[in-house]
Picture 1 (cartoon, rainbow, N blue to C red):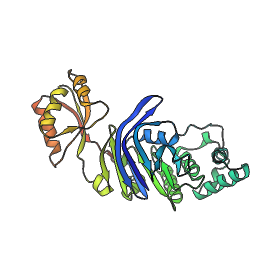
Picture 2 (cartoon, helix red, strand yellow):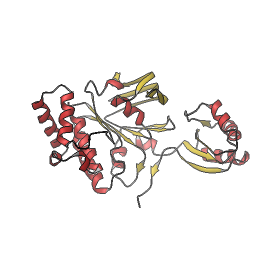
Picture 3 (cartoon, helix red, strand yellow):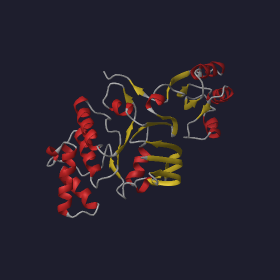
Picture 4 (tube, rainbow, N blue to C red):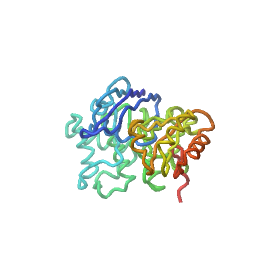
Length: 307
C-alpha cells in the first residue's frame, strides 16, 4: 500500500477542513496519529479535494471506497438506531450491486470473519461502542477490499471492548493492508501494539505533519512542541525565529498569526526545530520576551497509564 498526499486541501460543506497537507506512507500497516478526520471524511464522500493531490496505490483517495479498493470502518457511523446488524451489512452489500441473496450471504460471512456472528439480530442502538466498532470492521470487509481504513478503532474503549476490537482487527486484516488512526497513544492499551508494529507512522498537529517514519523513529523523540503563552506572542515569534525555530501550525499564516497575537492575550501554536536543545531555545526565547509559558508539550501525544 502506498499513500501520497501533495499539498492537499480538503473542504467540507464549502469550508476548508485541511490545508496543504503533504506526506508519503508505504507498507502493509500505516498509522495516522492526530486529527485525520478530514481524510476519513474524504474517504466517506463527505469531503472534497479542493486542490493538490491525494493518492492511494496510484488512484484518487476520494474514489478508493467507491471502487472497492478500501473498506471503511468509521468510529461513529451515522446509522439508523432501529436497524439490526444484519440489516446494516446487507444494505451495504446491496449498494455494491449484489442481489438480495448475495448480500445476505456476504453479511453473514463478514460477521463470521471478525468472529461475531452472534451480533446478527442485535439492533445497532443496543451495541456497546466496542461491538459497534466490530460491526463496522465487518462492514469494511464487504466487497473484499485490499485495504481497510479504521478510524480511531480503540478510542474510548474499556479493557474488554479493546480486546474485542483487537481480535476483530487481527481477523479482518488477514491478507490485506490496514490504515489505523489514533488521537493519541495509550502506552498501556492494546492499540499501542498496532502502532509499534506499523511500517509507517504519520503524526499531524495543527494540520501539519510533525513526524513521519517507522515507529521507533517517530516515537523516539519530539522535535515539535505545542506552545501556549499568556502574552507577548508577537515578540516571542520573532525571538523563536532568531533561534532557528519555526511556527509550523497552518491554521493561520504567519502574518495573520503575528497580527492576531499582537495583543496581550493567550496564544497557542506549534513550534519546531532541529537539534537536541529545542526546548531550551523555546524557554530562552520566552524568558527574553517576557512571554509566560502556560503550556509546553510535545506535539506528538503519548498518553500515560489510565487511572
